Amino acid sequence: MKAISRAAVVLIPFLLWGLVSGAPQGAAQTDSDAQIVEPITAIAPPGNLEPDKVQLGEMLFADKQLSSKGMLACLSCHDLSVGGTVRERRTIGYDGRTHRFNAPSIFNVGLNYRLGWRGNFTSLELQNEAVLLDRNLMSMTWPELIARLRANRWYAAKFKATYGREVRREDVLNALATYERSLVTPDAPFDRYLSGKITAISGNAINGYRIFKQYGCASCHQGVNVGGNVFQKFGIFSGAEPSLNTENDGNLGRWTVTHSLSDIGVFRVPSLRNVELTAPYFHDGRTDTLDEAVRIMGRTQLGQELSDREVEDLVNFLETLTGKYRGKSLQSTR
Image (spheres, helix red, strand yellow):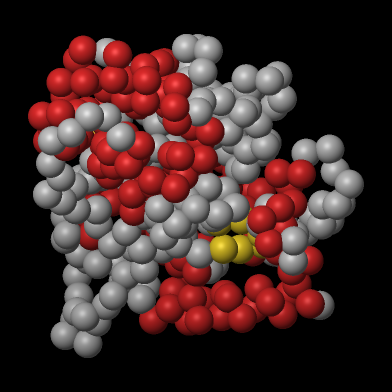
């Protein structure tokens, strides 16, 4: 009963929202419903980012010199050609240990309120530093990285021109974060639909969006990034709480950060932008298909056994969230 009560608190406002906002924005409207506010908002193009910093950050992001053994780059786990992630459930780190979590997409990362599956970082700079220094990720030290970059003539000149000084820790972090903030994917079909172009998505997708709101999916997946801004327990209606003795403590969610029992199994809600491209899904990469991911979410988070038609329409809606990067549509894997 405790789990059901908690879920009801989250879902009831959005169930009511779904009932009163059944007419999608852009559909034929009367004067009384013309001011409907949708739970999802369109992505805007990136703001005024300094081009030199974006270029420098892009070079660093793809450079294996940022890892201690020269084996990995940020791009190794966040491949822009496959949705900003990799096609692995959980990757293997430097010391041979499997990483705790599935690699999330790097696209639109700057739009998230918190970063990481546990939401334990509040800025890209903090997260990037943690990744660089983690012995099972890039396994780097600042003295070694700064020495490498200063010894590289291109980087030495580029940092001098961009920041007016020799390579420094804070400038490396700033360049990486500036590039990552440029990785937005606006102009998805659903964004165009929100602007009033109702033919931008299919009737099935429109019905999927209606279900998405009525069943309460939008209580956690909302805003410009369709997620990324709240925490939620994984397994509200079904699924036993993970054991404190589990081999993969990543399943414990925020507990590994806060050590509060109420945070066992609690995760930052992921963004659904470009979700059709980012399989495998969930913090542990447990499923490779979007259809199955939708069914799992229905059972665990909504207490619903979704019909085949509902799953199909929800997937059709989710596929409309695939946007464009640098003017080109990201490619579907379906």
